[in-house]
Length: 75
Image (cartoon, rainbow, N blue to C red; front, side, top):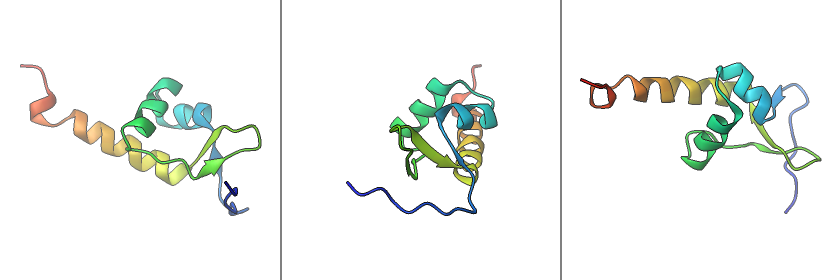
């Protein structure tokens, strides 16, 4: 599979960097990918997933909003 061209002006984050930005654990980022809340833009030379800052921020906001829905709150 060909590696996509990455924009040199964009900031890309690994799973660890995405977790730090979102204030969650790296396992949470992997869960977001698994649940299709966040899609990697590609992989680095070592095979680690890469994400844009914007995509991470959007996924973080979306999952926090989902967590605040009344049906997700304990009574």
